Length: 418
Image (cartoon, rainbow, N blue to C red; front, side, top):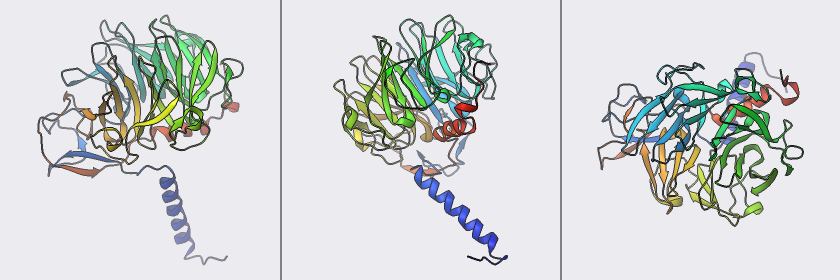
């Protein structure tokens, strides 16, 4: 087909626009996420002044953890900070200046670069998957000092002591009762373990992606594992994102707990069920496993008998507080469970933290819904005012950030162990 010179630029512009629309549709996420707020004619879409009853604000929170006292810790990805929500409803910054960096030291002077996940041990120490720094950071319970537990600013797959180890986009962390930290090393397609002394080892997987079960170190493979959890018995659960599987590591063997290699939302028995890019997992004391599906805006549940169901969310982007499938989320990216069985969700594109009771009742526990880094009251005291829906630019797409990293640095081109 011949295209006249004058029309050719218009043709290519139309073609590019069509491609943008196509990929936006395929992602199943609007490029402008919705969030709710109280009616306010002065709204600008960004919280920088501490208005609206000084409600706290977040910027694309992607990870949550909860300690024995009920404090909730948040990996505030867009702000490069770790935030804390007390049981009394006060939000503070635990660590991070807000600037990108890898500086260790007192919490208010330390820096992070894209923290995606947090976990807390029995002593109250907080561990952070500092994704863009390729490091695992530690925030001391004693004095709030930030240090590097493992990893350096180099990308690769190398075991060793503290900064001699290399990671590639560590996306999930979970601590066991002994203080070992398990890491979903997404870019390397492996699962790592870091001891309290900072010794890193690989416990499952190998660099070439796959979905093989079997011996953890010689046979099993993963494809961009992004979330991780550990139960009281030491069993490790993995959100194997690009395989659309939930995997289990037990006694040196990897198995598929639920799902099959299909991108879909299907409930039912274990391997007949299906997930759509599962990205975070948590396990309660009764061995129920909870899964966030970032793309479909759902929270899924795997019962001890392997039955998969939708625990909360209706599959539509929103911020409706309700019960079970009457509630809505917008890019849930992190999940944690407390001793009473309550779930905490990092609702990324709503910029809020949600809570789900064991009965499935969903509520918002912190965040104004505005993009910001303001500390203060977790929620507004203004009750009963009408809510409006507003649109704001979507923050960095965590899912496709990970995909881009893997695409730019294929496993067979990496210089390992250097």
